[in-house]
Image (cartoon, rainbow, N blue to C red; front, side, top):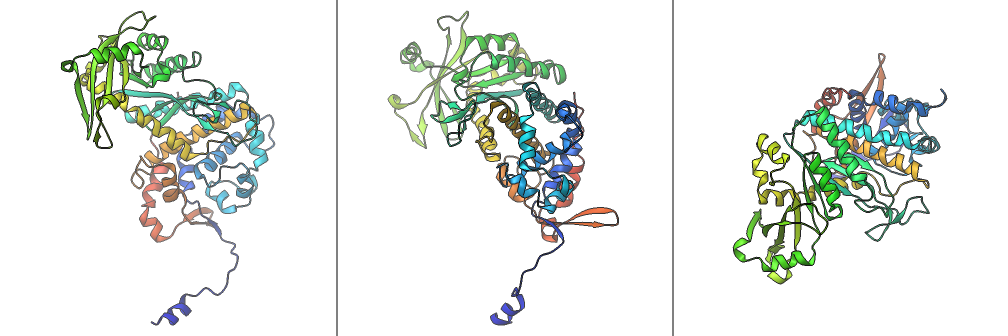
Length: 464
């Protein structure tokens, strides 16, 4: 066939409208099936149903469903995008909502402004419940938890309550967040000027989460907290030791510590290597001025950077404090669980360096949703922030329970959205049924039949 004949055969001569119900977000149906399968909406109704003062408007569960789908979709994170979705019958059919029941941007704004502080804190209960669910599914023999703050840059927004200068020289918020693996399991929304260990928030958060683990998962599973120097505080260490959990915390380099490092003979220095990177370190016991006892410390220096060896006088240094390997109850728990190797100095260094994986959770959250929050008042922004955390947790669960055979669980949200969520589909009504139809190529490429089965039969979970 000649080129001109091919052109005449494939040429599009006109464009017309269609009355077919089409959608470009067919993968959202999988997410909706999954969230219904874990019975989340009944739990949301129990906690937040009281926000609805009368029978007018949509049910709280319907509002949550549309907001969660809006966040998981991620096409636009401006609340005004709800007005565009309201006019899209294909999108409404995909998330199992009647076209007339779609929310407007004004409805969403009124919803978030209706939250009191008591109900805002209930979001933390949901996150913790989902965390317990993942624990029961994964059945870890050791639990490593990271604690850190995350700066949310709101510099370009108009005046907002709680937007304050942060340590990154931007105006914004700085919530305290607790992570476990890829999951963000608890958080406290705070203004930008609140430093890492502000007040007693960290201690209370750890006490509560550890109590949940002990009551609902295991009484003797080893728990280790990883922190940076912003949490270097004896008060926190005492709380952790009282809870019989371990901690690995980066400390502050005071002059006397540098003096000890200079005076330490080469025979006491050891090497730790991971992949191609090498660190030099030595152990010592340290007791700060007002400390009640000595604690184990490791002075550490990298010996190379980007494959090049560093001379001694240019090597950066840090010091790591821990209660592991000092005869504390955490040592007994680790030995009983078969992790006696974690008592060694090299393992403690590895755990400290593992804090980088905790940062990846914050990076994934920022890829999932924009840092800028939509409201001027602090309480509505807090409610929106916690809704984002809920959506992000569900997104990670959905990725692992439903999509792991198609998309690696380490993938960022943008990757899953492009591969799974952004699917062209047609919604057909026939014989009293509603059917989602995909092209044969998409069906086979994504193994959609398997995704459909996984989304409808998530792991069984009983809410505590």
